[in-house]
Image (cartoon, rainbow, N blue to C red; front, side, top):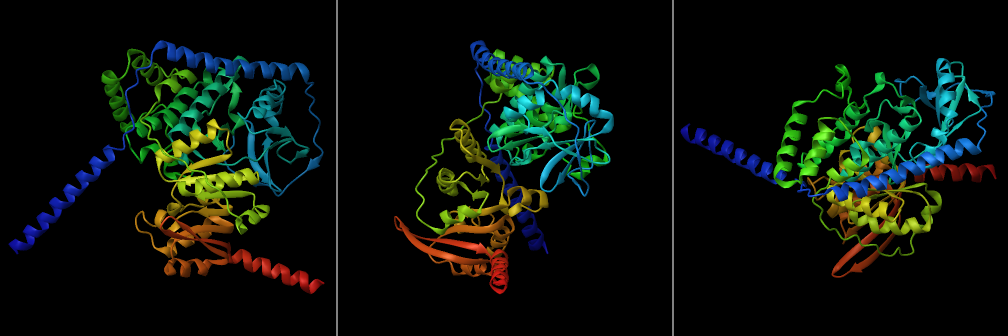
Length: 500
């Protein structure tokens, strides 16, 4: 009995030791570095963002001067609409009709909307990518005398953003707020739940948050701080859980059991802000520490402050872009509207495909450093590949799956890249690939992996196989079509044959 108790105690001690090791490894994920920026660095950024704001203000004034804004009465009554959310705002609600994204304007808000519309703010900032491009449609419903139509954009919500994307979204929101204030408006719900990335551009999608600027609607700074800036602090200190949790996310229903105000800091916020300030006392310049006080104690949020404050330790990653060989994958581009690459090894291929056809290209990676590197590269070269920080093996909820589902899914080195982490079984891997693929799948494996091929043929029909020697490694490239899609195509062909 004593021996058994002794063995149990040894197991407990071993588990404690393992947890300590894991805690130490997580602590090494910190990317915070000292920031020695001077006033000239701040002035340079301030001048840059002022030039952007002045350009937008001039564009809005020019639009108003050169366009006579006439609002025609709608004449097409519609029904059978599908609401995207039951929670509306003062302006109205967003819904879908015949695949179009529409926003109905409440009858009591029509006059206020016309006043906003005639400023030219929505139209001009839509052309500059700050809002979705918006027009007044010819539709109306029993409840909405005016219906707007929004141009559909690629949706990438904030829980799948890397550090650089959160930072750019916060800067974009501040720029938008500053421009609106020139014309007597501001953002009521200025948090990151109302922003998405359309490829590599942050877009504010809720024009119902544009309200008259008065003292009763002053919550923008709190909302942005708690939905974005604190998350970047969590990032800097390597907290992999808190950095991805978005406050006031409708998908997290538990938040709504007891609604939480943005200015109510939790223990985690106080703890990490204290660590952030303590680190800065030793490693930052006096200016940077002053800006931390301005932002987190005074809630004075400005684009140049955010840009200067949030720097991090960067790791160089080589991004190789190779050539696309002749394959069914190129022919498949004629039949696809969106392409999804999984992991960094697939980046070179979708980068080359983007030169062949203009589609909605996206890349999913599960590493912060890689996501930041790819995003910055695409932004600098004005590329068209959007970046998702995500793991396909954990796409459990319907919203996440729908956001990444694509006509063509590409996975290079599939068995070594995806299943190497947590040792996922092949049936789980193939099931997830089938779940996010609408039509086609293109994968490469090393050698002949019979178990993977057996699972693959349960869900897909292989259309093409070829081999290529990469150094001493024999790689097999497989292009296949979703079995459900292939059966659907065969049934369609039979109907056409019978009719002839």
